[in-house]
Amino acid sequence: MSVLAAERKVAIQAVLQASKVCQSVFKNLVSGETITKNDKSPVTVADFSAQAVVNTYLGEHFPEDPIVGEEDSKDLRDDAGKALREKVLELTNGVFSESEKLSEDKLLEAIDRGNYAGGATGRHWALDPIDGTKGFLRGGQYAVCLALIVDGEVQLGVMGCPNLPVDASKPDGPRGSLFIAVKGQGAFQRAFSDTNETPIKFSDINSTQQATFCESVESGHSSHSDSAQIAQLLGITREPVRMDSQAKYCSISRGDADIYLRLPTSATYVEKIWDHASGSLLVTEAGGAISDVNGNKLDFSVGRTLAKNKGVIASNASIHEQVLKAVQTVLSKKQ
Ligand SMILES: Nc1ncnc2c1ncn2[C@@H]1O[C@H](COP(=O)(O)O)[C@@H](OP(=O)(O)O)[C@H]1O
Ligand SMILES: [Mg+2]
Ligand SMILES: [Mg+2]
Ligand SMILES: [Mg+2]
Image (cartoon, rainbow, N blue to C red; front, side):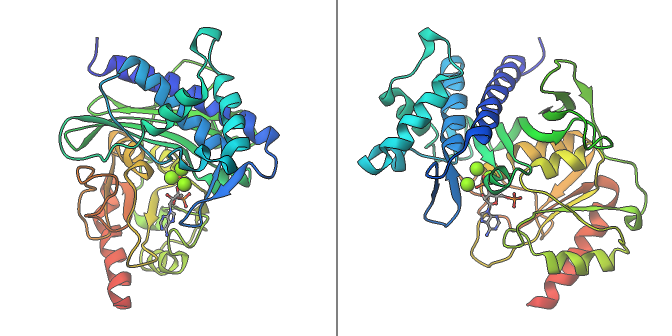
């Protein structure tokens, strides 16, 4: 059996089940099932349920492994959270068999299994139950993102993108794309509805002029004005493709676009490991290169955040150096 085969299998199952929860919530989402967190970002019943589903699978198969998950159960515990808690319980139990169904206490416990602090030693998982919650709410792209980190290095990444077309050249064709990468074993895609996996790789471009940017919809997450200047420096004329979530990493890794820039919008924002762990491995396994805007490797060993990094640049390995230079030229003018 290949390295991490068991983890790969469980991660795929967990991500697919969590993605199903998200899909069914979207169809039935009503107001009152979304709350706003302290940082003003939204969180929905689907984020909590997806985290509960994934953490339950991981707890069952790898009980010793800690998890760094984005959400926690605080807002579900008090009286004000009662309606939300009941809804999350119903949704979560919807994917489990009769004998697996969770009590309220077990549900909250499962969500809070994601409270691990992360760090440089041993194994832990990083989970973003819905990356791109804003995309989810607007019917756009979002992704269930799960990664296994061992001694600070991402070894496995699985991402479920329910709204991403299986074939980018057929935007109105079937949706629901699952991406899988294991360090040293390559990057793969499959449709939600089909277990066949296809290897993926970056598109072969030899000049930045042919490149297409992929960037956040939210200009508050990555500066659109800086990226326009960088595009100009690189001779890029194509319009950027904007989408929410780590579906951006998936898109460039299978050659739909070429460069993903995440350009800092504030001096204080620190990127979270769950927003990049699975996507960064997919990129390198698909023949791409990834660094922060200073050219440093993303460092997943320092806890729940990428405290040692600033922004992200991911692209085909052959043009990465050139893109990095253009990013630095534009960012240095701002200082
Ligand atoms: N000021 C900021 N700068 C960069 N990223 C931010 C941000 N505020 C929130 N985010 C992160 O941006 C993620 C979405 O990224 P994108 O814009 O690429 O879709 C959010 O993930 P969640 O949706 O999981 O909360 C959140 O973690
Ligand atoms: Mg969030
Ligand atoms: Mg996220
Ligand atoms: Mg999230």
